[in-house]
Length: 142
Image 1 (spheres, rainbow, N blue to C red):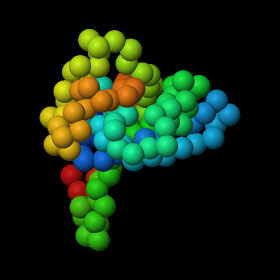
Image 2: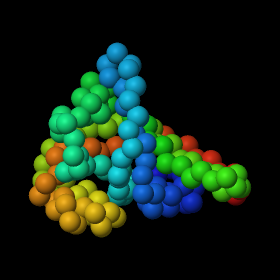
Image 3: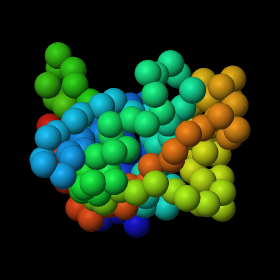
């Protein structure tokens, strides 16, 4: 399980979007917003059917070259007493079997109703799995 305060784990469970940071072998960074699901301490994100130039996404190439990633989930508000963030550092890889993919896709469909209409279970491209190695969390008020 994640080594993080309960509020931070809940924030990861319920957040609608995160920002995934990857870097290629040369260290060139890329940060992209992603939909994701947290299952038993791992984070999953699928390449879905939203319009893209290609499904061979740079983030996937980066992970193939350099599996070290970070995911940031945050709450920002003009009322700074509501500020909070969680950063998950870890290693990422692509799920390769249907046995691995099925629970990840089911969790994504359960979290995002848009994926039901998209029929994610049959239209998903690669599924990325992040195994956390470190979790940092901060919020303005405890």
